[in-house]
Length: 136
Image (tube, rainbow, N blue to C red; front, side, top):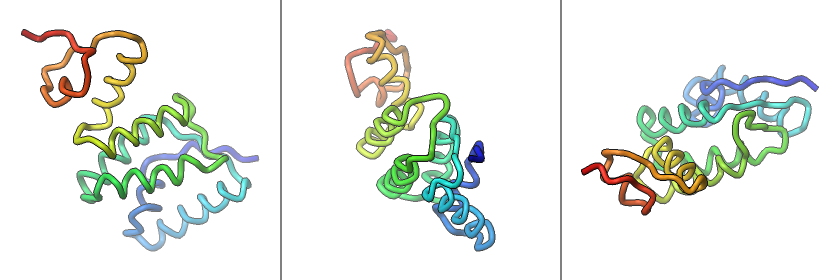
């Protein structure tokens, strides 16, 4: 089975459908993934970039971003090579419920999982939990 490392623009074109030719190529690819003809490998960094572009450039609502990405992540032949699928799904869940950036959520969850403390000047980030060092 052919394995492909997926760049953010393939995912973005599939979701926003703003270029008919690129959309058709990405749609065919994800159909082959769904039908288990191909295997897609994605980095957590790609997901972060996709979330940022969809939210800031295309102005999609968080729910739209979360729903679109969850659908792709849950495909059996999509593999996150530098994280667990559950980790990405947790990130998206929190992203959909907050105003924080994905990177901030990731740092918070990783610090919490390690029973560590997160140092930040971001007051909004510091408001999500009690695992923060005092910056005063």
